Image (cartoon, rainbow, N blue to C red; front, side):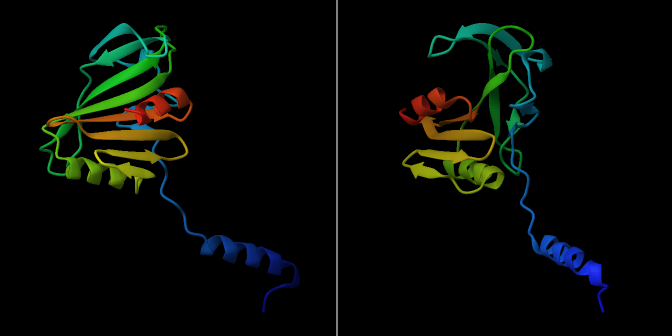
Amino acid sequence: MIARGAAPVVAVALAVAGCTSRAPEYDGIGNWRFPHTRLQNIKEGLCQPTDLSDGRKATWCFAQRPIRISRDAKRSAEVDLYFLGGEPSAPLIEIQLKVHGCHEDELEQWLRAAFGAPIEQKPQRAYWKNSFLWVGALMPSDPGRCLVHVLPLSENAEIDRLKQL
């Protein structure tokens, strides 16, 4: 028998116990996280100033440590990072993955494992979105090469531009 004042507490505990927890959503890829990674955090590779397609000043960092995109470690992606501005506190605004010798089905499988089912799929294109970021995969972008753009949701104009490619 449940004590008189304990019934609401037991009901809440049962309701919480019945809830299923969702897996945490990604806010970046590898060591690069949109709300946290700043230009000052980049310790390897090369960085140089660049202009974005909308005229904003940015910093492009390339020759980063590649990331593995296949379970058997045969395939990896080159990583380019883009930061808004050139000051050390400049925030990360794009992670770009370049996959040479790309097998589209393998890349899509990797993206589905990380981000779930795409929100939209077209021939040679697929898009994912969660609470933190948007992913656009061009499979292939050139013969034998796939390109994956990962952007924070705040980059609406760039997301719209990439959808038109």
